[in-house]
Image (cartoon, rainbow, N blue to C red):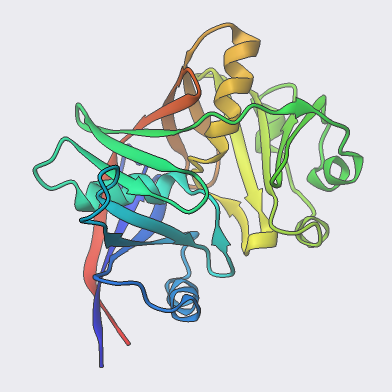
Length: 262
């Protein structure tokens, strides 16, 4: 029997039972992909992050991969923040090498952390079938190659009222579907749906703000924004556009520590 450490962290959490739970599993070496996927399915959280030290890499401290219960994903913000929280120790920053998102850095930021992610601009694109399945009165649709869509609504009430057709959206594949509008007590409000990756609604989604930050920065003509993701758990972030990077700040709370037995 093999025992692996597992730490569950609520990321982007400003109070108990808020934010997005992620499992972080620091490994000494990579397990095969099928085992990583099976562990993530067993954990049954929106993401499980696996890390391996990279002592010979001058640019990164760890390699990092993320799995939903169904698939490996290209980028996950909240599980990266959670991984930094777990592995920070006495350092001021932790650097992660990822397969498709480059080097990601988690740094100490007052009582929380700052997470540096790529800024991903979008472009207007008609998405009528997806918009119909999202529901509500969609005012604008934006797309980024790789499977990322933004649906813009009039106000926060429209975002709260959404009841997407998950069966239809799931058939489109593992797309990141972001509903957004001007916020009530924040610059922007959003909800995020990824049914094709086994997550009907994600509680708080760092990667979605890689797209939301450039969009709202241009629309509101400001580079520092406040954001609220209006899931059942809810989560608050501060977002800053810095050149071709997005800096997200938020707090983390460790809620479970233990061992996963194989």
